[in-house]
Image (cartoon, rainbow, N blue to C red; front, side, top):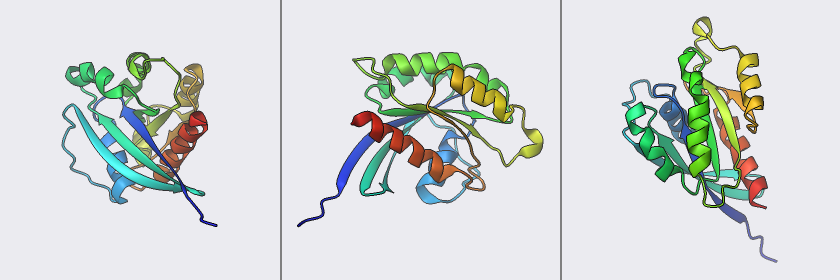
Length: 179
């Protein structure tokens, strides 16, 4: 008997204000290396990585959206057809969480023709900068619950803390939704 491995592919969009660490999160996940001097994303960037989850290989097509206001107009066209999302903010910059309403509204409205709900999680980055933290974990968790998001994580692209867990969690949620 042949052991045929189940293969799945998902479009995952990462969005949030500029400078919160979206690109460093993705690069750390892709290469396991922290890149300090990353240039600003212009429009969107795209990466692909296969992730092994139990008996499945999941292909994540990861879209990294520029967070600057001038690029926000591009989000709807890039978000179309997404299977999951990560709203990211910087735990050391309170202003980066202020626009969560706008980001979620833009993203959720344009994800699919059917307007079906998809799993979206919230991620607070830069937790290695403990002395500069301005958004408490409890406050972020309350916001995540308020918006009905699928979970809240904190991470550090610099140390690698929780990076793998974030992507495996959202991949599992996208698998659950696809059944």
